[in-house]
Image 1 (tube, rainbow, N blue to C red):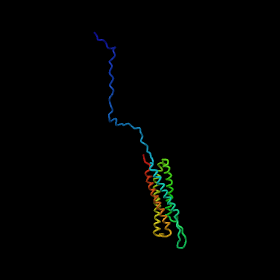
Image 2 (spheres, one colour):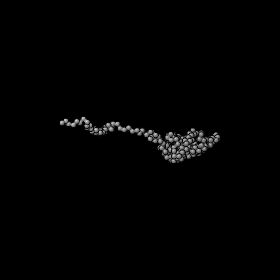
Image 3 (cartoon, rainbow, N blue to C red):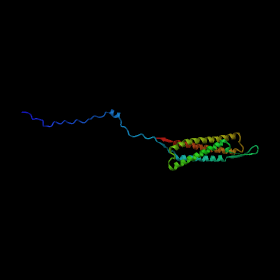
Length: 209
């Protein structure tokens, strides 16, 4: 007897292949790190505020001493009689050292007035006029003006000492020289305040971020 035919029965189904469980090796993961899309921070320049109130006080003190020195130098005159009986009037314009001292005082007053206006604007509004560019103007301007005031005071002191020692000591010109000495002393004080202002302008220089 023949066995029953299996031609009409469906073929046995084969099971699906198991899912792949292969994992990437650590070396391949580190070989190609993920690329960051964040861009580096841009290069910016900011101007620090410093101490605007103290800077304003220093500017005002510098201006006051310069103004008093200017007034004393401008009104400093002397009239004396020479050996021939002629009256001779001498003022600051007759001596180059005093003229230079007066010129440095006028330049210092002009610069200090400008910086005082900027300082008042910063104190009243909380913002610095001119931004970073003005910080550099303060830094270099304070240095130049400070040195100029120092040289003007030195010129006034030098010629006064020479005249007192060589020519005019004990004469009618003593009052003239003493006033010039006082003006030079006030100019030295103004130089000191200006030099301190230059320290604060250095602290307010732009910081790179």
